[in-house]
Amino acid sequence: MVFDAGSAVEQVGTSIAFADQAGKLAGKLFPLSLPSYAAFLYFLSYKGNGTPKQAMFGFQFLLFFVASTVFTGIVTKSVYSSTLADVDWLHGAAEALLTTTNLYVASGFRNAMAGEAPPEGGSFRYPAFAVFALVVLATAAGPSIGLEQHTPFLGGLGNLGENPLGSLAAAAEPENALSIPTWAIHFSSVFEWLFAMGMVNTYAKATGNDKWRYLAYGMIPLHASGVAACTYHFFYNSADVGFLVTLQAALTLLGNTTVAIAAVLLALSNGWNFKDALTDANPFSNDEGATNGPSPPVITPQPMQSTPLIAAELVLLTLAASYVMKYGETALGVVFEPNAILGGLICLAIPAGVTYRFVSLPSTERTAA
Image 1 (cartoon, rainbow, N blue to C red):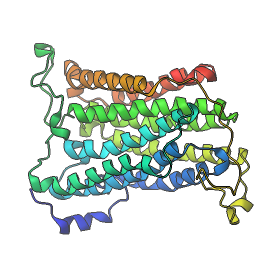
Image 2 (image 1 turned 120 degrees about the vertical axis):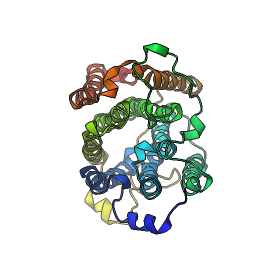
Image 3 (image 1 turned 30 degrees about the vertical axis):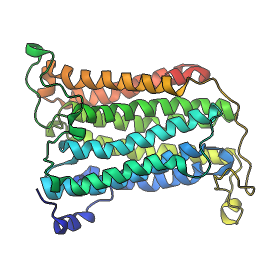
């Protein structure tokens, strides 16, 4: 297949995010969530908050993920006449940027509380930019080098030739089933976001400002958005549960709004006011060497697991979830007969359970939630 540049240009104006959803409600809701997210970034970067530089960059890098959904969506529509969720190699590539975002956010808060400052300058950002460059290059070159609609992401690294369940599987999975690498990208994003929520909550104790917990709670709808996406893939992206894509977009809009509100409350609690915003005091500088503007809070070190241990736990949990999902779900006949009620219950139950577990624990223990 050859990439049609003319057709691609026509697609550019259809939607700011998730171009393959243009003309649908989801395609309208995703762009509507961007102003709230911009406000979130603005207030979270207030120097008085003391947001870790690495975590702040992670939140900012989400915009690169949004950009990736535009050009991957364009290629999806113009080359394959399909949706991004049904083009595994493009789907996994785009989601890799979301995983990168969440990894920076989670590790940024964790490292700040462990007293591990990022390298001077912007070198800590280079790996993220490298991932983005690879995604752009792969998206541009993929159709020209023969990547088909159902070519698996990363060559299907880790895929098994046959389902180990054998006759226990209700039926063979369809050709649009996610590969192990794409499932792994999804699960790692979800787990990293949950870890980030716990780190944000603990950061309230480290800074002595309880308002940071508002941000942790504000992140819950975005977790639910990720669950909605995974549920849609669980049912092999069936049109019978297409409402899950709209639900994902609505939860993204809600989540971007709740984190924006949380960031406003946090900035106000740390001394933000309109006067600062209108002067040249540069109160939003996050540079360590800056001397103007408000002083960031003093961070009280907190006991943290070592980075190698956290990484090992994340990898093992991600792989286990990916293999169980890809090969275990075929034993459930329900996935071949998608049910909107069941899909809605999954999207409600998992975030509700996480929320209950999170808020019911003492604040000092919520990082384990």
